[in-house]
Image: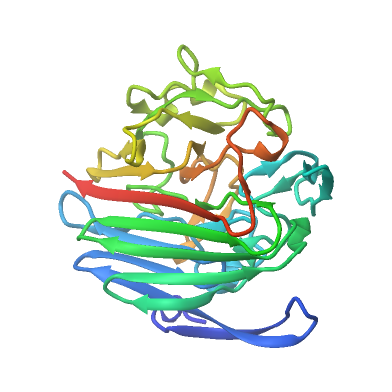
Length: 356
């Protein structure tokens, strides 16, 4: 498959897979573009994944600011989660188990004894249905998750809509309905950003402000301890904007932590973060309705072949994954992620991009 052709065709390939009833089916994987003026975003229904986001810098130069692979095949069995929707429960669940209504659920581990981003075949590893697509406005993906998929109880109907708002905003709405059993739900969008361009090097000089006065610290397996700790006076303090790399050497291996977002005005989205990059002049602002955001500086990237032959290494991108708190199913003091039958889950993200 050529380097240019894969982004240009709507239907890329069909693969055979075994569905939840043991029946072999063929399903198509495609690439879909949303575009207004110089602002364009591409997606695939494999993992409901964001493939690219192209926008101008302060001089009008267009760059793709999202890390990713050269072809769809790169996203299959990928361990970076580039641009994917992760779930049924994003982030980590300690011991890959939890208790709900006095019943113990054993999940499918995929990071030692723990579960990460929904298990070995989470939502990032399945083919979603394209429910609705208008190239100048939105695309909606749906997925039906079955009872005990990756160990989670109950059937779950999931929907993700990406929408262009004006000429410089991208909205993301993640929804889910528990159909017959109570189940935890915590979806997240795992996009890696580099505002200077995906192939421009590291993000250590990016300027970041995070509107979270506290974090949920973790143990040596990245599982939350259950504490909520203030960031003031620590390398995790981004309440005032400063360069990401200014204190990163004080940490064992970069940033990978959940911030407890400060409460905003009632009825409004919380402002989660502002990222600025001085060379391009680009700025990303992020709002959400969720209580947390995982800040990750791609610490585990190691010579990953990416788009255009560029090789991504440590600190090549930054992730800002709005979410419920990690391992909430095992910490009663954390906001609950349990969705009961008939109830709905809703997760909203709003990005605004400018350049000056």
